[in-house]
Image (cartoon, rainbow, N blue to C red; front, side, top):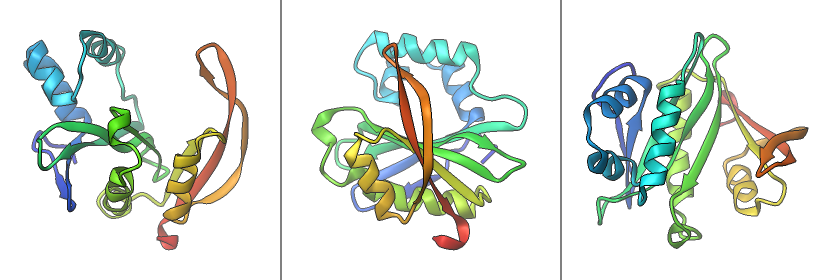
Length: 181
């Protein structure tokens, strides 16, 4: 996990390529713009500028880290999204899982379900997580179905938890414990 050589998980249709803080720093400081866009699966310079700003601001801090996996389509070699852990509290053995597909064309095709199983296993086994959390908007039915499919338990509501385009929205918190997997 603390290496410049990424772990890869393989599924039927995807290669899941690890992105940890060490790899992230190396990629962001050595690749040119076009190579960065390809690596992250960005279509626009705006997406790249946003990522560069996130890099400048720093994504890790003492006791907290991240570990993502790029979802790479085996047949096209294109990055079609990501899934992984942010807000990873090392001492407490817990992290929040997040995920996103880069385009609507990849939605409703089972890609995230295909990626999530191996990534959950990786979190519990390789990262030594005890608890994985998912925070979702109630109206995000695909995400609700995804976490329920993997046995996450609904714990409660975080009121006005996220600022989405200037509107404070509630989040529903779900969790999955290692012994429940």
